[in-house]
Length: 194
Image (cartoon, helix red, strand yellow):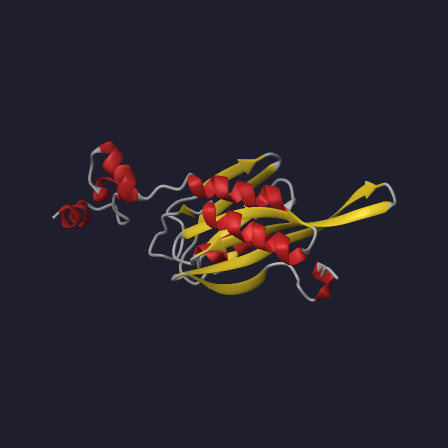
C-alpha cells in the first residue's frame, strides 16, 4: 500500500544520506497524489518535489512521478542531485545582497540578514535555505503559494546572486573598491587599500 503524507511522513521531511562521500541532505518539500481516470476506475500516482543540498553552498531541486511514494521521492532526489548549483554566501551564513526572483506567478524576495536572525521564510523557501546552509536570511513570497513555483522562483533568485570577488574580477578592480567602506572615512579606506 502506498503511503500518503498523512501517514506521518509530513512536508519538509529531513533525511540524511551518505552518497559516496558527499554529505547531501535532502528535504521532501511537497508530495501530491494525482489520479488518472481509466476504464474501470481511477489509477493513482504520486508527484514529489525534493530539495537537495550539502549545507555548504550547493543546492538543487528535482521532481519525480511514480505509482508509489518511495519511487517518486527517489526519482526526484536523483534529478535534484544532477541539477545542483553553487551559491556564493557571505561568511558562509547569509546572502551577499538582496535579490528578487520570479517564475511564472511565483515571486520571491530574499534579503541578507545580520547574525542571529535565523531563517525567516515560508515552507518551500525554508527547505531551500536549510539545505543550502544559509543561517540568516529574511525571505518573502509575494506571488503564487504553489510550492513548485516558489522553489523555482527561489532558485531564480539564487542564480542571480554575485559575490564581490566575481564582480571585482569582471570589472578589473579590487574587492575593496567594490565594497567601499562601512564607516565611509578616508582613513578606513586607506587601511583597506594598504
